[in-house]
Image (tube, rainbow, N blue to C red; front, top):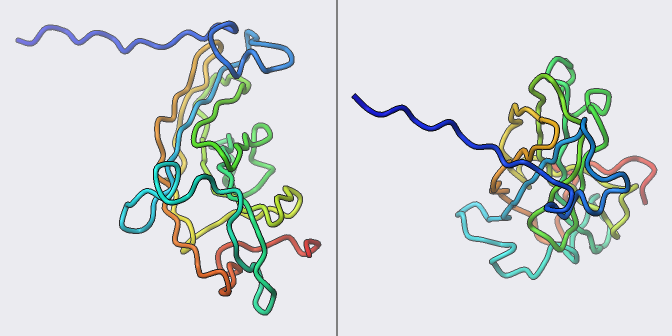
Length: 192
């Protein structure tokens, strides 16, 4: 007979101990938790692109977004959406978001953010977003075949605790700068 397994320990979050809490305007509250994630961009063969690959960051990539246009600079950002699992439209629809997405910079591979806690499990969906010219108003989410990301995960977000999503492998297969990204990243119509 095996001895009983110890129960998993949860990390308790204190405002003084977590950088994200220290930066928040209101600090940690009784109805808030923290979502933490790390990621690595890899190519289809699994070789690291960023942070341990050829790129120093994902802030100055070159490409076109529509056929016939000249290549321009764009940034790739990682985004975490927290969604209502009962919402039929899924995380693609902003109406299903329980709060604004957490957006992390193009020069980092780790991030955390303070979010509202929830009594029920939520869907946590990670996306790769392109910002042409660094403009968030003209952002588009990269889909297949340019980016492959793991599917949504159900997690609890408890008050005062860290929900650690661990490390995500985000697979990139970006076309050459002269080939358009429009098949996997549709810009809003008002964007130039």
